[in-house]
Length: 262
Length: 265
Image 1 (cartoon, rainbow over the protein chains, first blue to last red):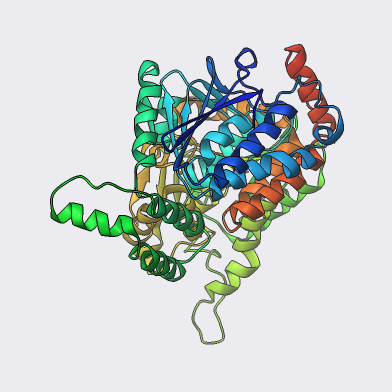
Image 2: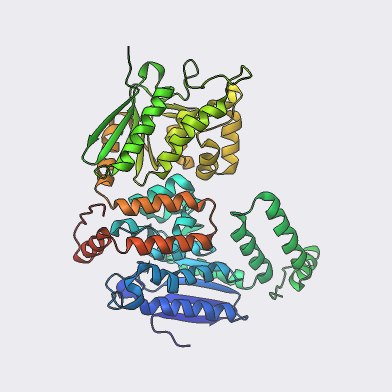
């Protein structure tokens, strides 16, 4: 389908979503979040897609919900709970459930739910000039888009409370040091680096990557005994895949593996 | 002489609670715990109080249970100390009350925080530590395990590997190291600690109190919730906050590019 507020490009198993309201630092309007939701549904169903890259057009990644959106006062967006239930929460659930790696290239400010999008991705890489902001408390809200769950797991309970309550702007470098994101690179190197990583993942052992994602999704709720069972069951399935056979053969022959995602 | 184990002062929406047994490095006696609990209950019930600041007099924050006094409670019928009883009646209700208080609690850790004192410090939402402060899970040195929530706070702030080491080795952690590990939010020079802590508490007392309460509740539950459950919790809390006067003010101020004036409603 055609989108107006985001761009979707497919290239050899790599799908790239670009939030595309650069004049508003890609703030999320009612129309944009509906498209984002639809886009994740489309990509989840598309078996040719083996990795998703998320980024923003222009100098921002995503400034969060668009408070000046003319649609905000009408209908669902007037009720913050309903907006989360119908649009934002399904997007976060889709990002975590999609059985393919999600890479974020954080090219500028990631504020409010925009920061949640970055944290919900499997691998977030930021340009040096990017910044992260849990802006919610500044307007009398609490972090949403899963941030009250992501933050304590990424940076621990103490920093999570401070980031949520005090809403400080966090530099990309600080975010990397704290473990909020995977890596920071020079701004000019951001897209080439992110594409290289996403491309590598798109050509990787997709079923293994999906099981890794699923296992890590479950690890924080599981005790170790349960997690050992999850690993056993997943490994059993992976041991029967073509990519495992290819991986072992390539390892023994000291050549590069050619994974098909099967 | 009758001592006042906790000093309480209310100023500009901030209730400052100062542990006040400096001759014992503010070690926790039963009267001290009772007084703290009473003040936390007061903060919960008084709408004029919108933030709590917890600190200690003298050179220590809190040396833990007063082992030479009433800190370890009474003897059990077997003639041995019943630490479980004193945990249940004194320490645990205090930690629960701090975590459940729907207002931010800021810790200004002015010196050594050892044993239960370390974990009293870690129970605060925002921990500011003097550069000379230390966090010392001393329990193992007297053949105990961390309590007052220590076995929860540690893995949830510094990760499992460090938590196990700190609890088993009883290593004393200097403030700067605690900040690097994420055990505390920020280290501040000793001579500026109280000014900075008061400034922060005053700012938070003029902040979106309902938002802070919702954040506390969400963080309290995040440890055991799945992401799925947590998204539902965020939905419900955000729905309630979306109807608050402070949200209306926050959005209005944002759009008008002025500073918001929150009332806590």
